[in-house]
Each structure stands twice: as C-alpha cells, then as structure tokens.
Image 1 (spheres, rainbow, N blue to C red):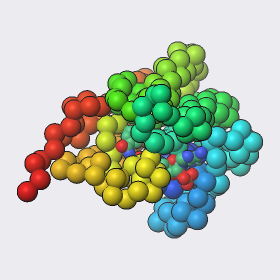
Image 2 (tube, rainbow, N blue to C red):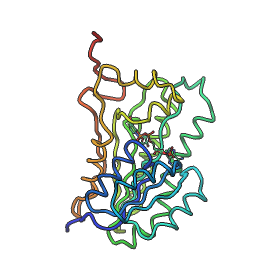
Image 3 (cartoon, rainbow, N blue to C red):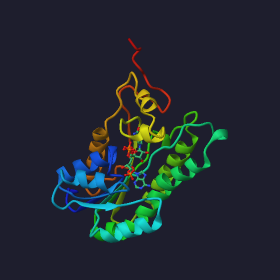
Length: 251
Ligand code: NAP
C-alpha cells in the first residue's frame, strides 16, 4: 500500500519559488526530478544542488509544442507537479488588460490541461501516478481587483476536480494545493518588477514560505496508494481568507 518516493517527479515552474522548493524536497525525498520553466539557466543552477538523476528542460506551458517536446524528453513520470503560473496586474474588471487576462488563462489553466494531457500516458504506465495542481486560495475565493487571476485559478480548480473524476479507475491520483500568501517572486511578477509594491504585499505579516508549500506537496504524494489527498488549503497564521490578513501596526 505504501507510496514510496521512487521514480521520476516532473515540476513545472521549477525556476523559482514554490516549484524550486518542491523540486528540492522531492529530490531530497528520493525522487529523480525533471525541472521545467522558461529560464533554463535558473534550472541549471538549481540542478547543481540536486541528485544525479536531475533533468533540466526549457518549458513554456502556454505553448503546446513546447509542452509536447518537454514530455517527449522525459523518460518516465510518476509525479507531475503543475505549478507554473502566476498573476499579472491587479485591476478592476472594467479596466483590465485583455493581454494579461489571456496570459493568465494560458499559463494557469491551459498550462495545467496541456501538461496533464501530455504526461497521462507516462503517469498511467507507472502504475502509481500522481498529479498535483498548485491553484490558490484565489481558486476558491475572490477579491476586489483580482478578477483575472481568481477567474483563472477558479478554472484551474474546476479542471483539477474534473480530472480526478475522469481518471477514476486509472492508477493516477489527483491533488489540488491551494495556498494563501507565499513570499516568492509572485508579487514581483504581478507588479511588473515594482519591488516596493511587491514588498508591501507582505508588510506587517509573516506569509508562508515556498518550503511550507513544498512540504505539503511532498506529503500528499507520499501517502499510501489507497489514499487520495483531494485538496490542501494552506494559510499563514496571519491570513484567514483571500481578503482577511492581520498586519502588525507599523511602529
Ligand atoms: P514565482 O516565484 O513567480 O514562480 C512562478 C514559476 O512559474 C516560475 O518558475 C516561472 O518560471 C514559472 N512560469 C510562469 N509562467 C510560465 C510558463 N508560461 N511556462 C513555464 N513556466 C512558467 O511564484 P510562485 O509563488 O512560486 O508561484 C507558483 C505557483 O503558485 C503559481 O501557479 C502561483 O499562481 C501559485 N500561487 C502562488 C501564491 C503566492 O502567494 N506566491 C499563492 C497561491 C498560489 P519562468 O519564468 O522561468 O518560466
């Protein structure tokens, strides 16, 4: 019944934040790891710290040809962590950038769909496949000015639940990881490199670390084979919902 940490784990968006931390933990737990992201040089730097079976491959989850080539270059896959994604901008629905919304949909929703489709044969052939999708609290709750990201993550959560149903009867378990605020490059990307705005996101509160989320992912994929962890919601102690965050008054 045990689900041992053997075989290969594929992590999308492994060049930063939650993906990089997850790759580190999966490797330390005993998995051979394949790292995918657009910034190959970052993956190569990370791979130097990981086990000998580590593979680094350029991947753009918004590009079907890139996902197909990526999957074809991976020899086997027992665990697929669909983590690549993020937010762009923070604007009212009536003032949005359509380009941002399309990019968020392509990365956070279609990226998951493309990767799950491309890796399903390997996951099934492994006899003990696991798909983990990193959604967000934004996949279940909304907040003002967050419509593009929350809509995309809600869709990613729905796709994940649908996938779990559609794969019943196959040896593939599907897990959703839905974190609240995590301090990574997420806010820097969201605010187009504005460091002050990114730093202010976490002002007066202690967010989750990428490693807190990685720990939950590794726990989920190492449960006995008869156990599916359907979803994990993770908050830092300072956060109670997508909108409720306790911040220490500034001194
Ligand atoms: P991050 O530090 O910005 O990392 C995002 C990762 O996604 C990077 O490795 C990036 O790599 C990759 N990525 C983005 N677009 C991609 C694409 N088109 N193709 C391939 N890789 C792509 O942010 P993070 O917080 O670790 O985010 C990881 C996931 O957690 C995202 O899905 C995010 O929505 C979710 N999440 C984050 C938080 C948070 O507060 N930080 C909370 C809940 C959920 P390249 O740029 O090198 O391609």
